Image (tube, helix red, strand yellow):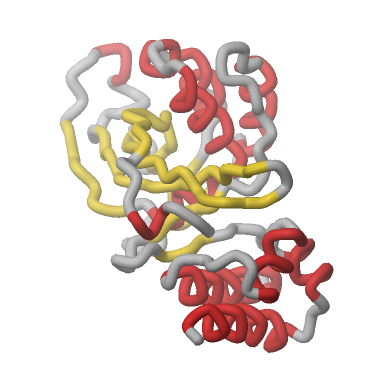
Length: 240
């Protein structure tokens, strides 16, 4: 009986959107086979899935109305996570960081608002280079390197969910102009999908620090994403 409840809940969420199973799968980037397994009751998602999916659907609908594509969900404890659905940079050992840098240049000149504080964060021309060529980036290996590379595709969402800032004074002369009024480290989280064949089975969730400098012109600029670390697996992370 419990499995039927899961099945009906997932189906009811889809039916509320008015979409077919195929259209829903395409719209919300869930593999069609995964949806079929869920709705048929052959595969049981964990209990948190329906709640997260409802939130995910509502956020996506709201963003589509504003012509945006930021995919944000909440975990079982209510903390926000940005979903990275576009795994553009696939190599673990041989990520093309020049390609990542070119991708990040598309953000230069834009600005986004931190939802929690309503502060504007600007993206200047130094960000792509620092993100891809800093010493902290060069120290990343394996899955953490892949995670940072693909977090590049959700920078606006990461700024939006940034929380718990920690302030540090500027201590380097070379940053006197760029960080005259110091630095802020914000907590962010993002998730990368894991597949078994064509079936999406879970998300690996990563924590990171978003480094923002407070410049001489009194604007805050995104400088880098640092301290990227995969979270220890928890029951609510095992399967989506």
